[in-house]
Length: 264
Picture 1 (cartoon, rainbow, N blue to C red):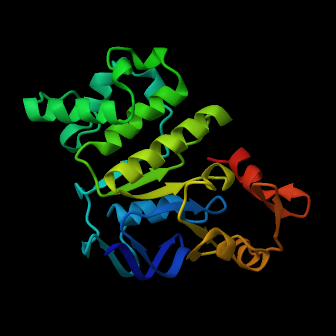
Picture 2: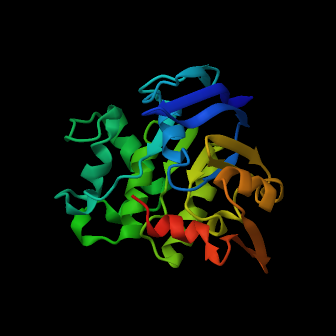
Picture 3: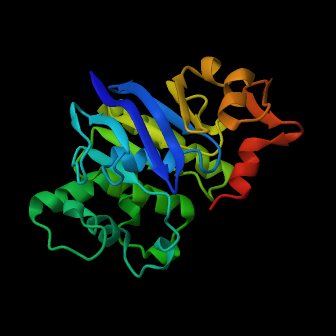
């Protein structure tokens, strides 16, 4: 079954096509790494799937129905998370604030909703964070709570927009392994946006690379090639493989690290 289908989707902002005539299908239970340069359309694609951005043309089907805002079958971890650390909330309250689709404010939860919050905390290994203030926990621990929020309602499609930002390599590995375990255990389809391919190499089924308005979906060895990435970046790109790592180079510059350094 196709969990996500885009047919000739175009999205433009200020006259510039961020996504141009994109068509693709993603099947159930797939773990997809979403990559590309800054402005390449990664966040825009997720907002289109969420029904937050309407395409200029084309059709988007999510789980067999048109993409609509507030689809309970979708879980979403947004990219902008800077204010989380300053919130005067316990871990439990923070996760509960997303119950019933509410991101802020503390709803009065019934027993079923309270069980759901506890399930989400247990699933991401964050039960021990329930009574701790957000200001006193690490960035990696906050990511667990954000992921718990995204899992409320037990979604079938999980959209993660740059969940590795600002995490050191250890916590990056922990978060990737956690999400892979959840994906396999519950059969969830995952779209995992990242600035760099290497942390995802051992877990993804396919890579979706976006750039210059275009999209290429396929196995790593099919997509991460000089000719394909040169077309998506609009400039000559070399792909260097060193042991179990892949480096995307523009001359002597590693373009994925450059994109992260200037990320906004």
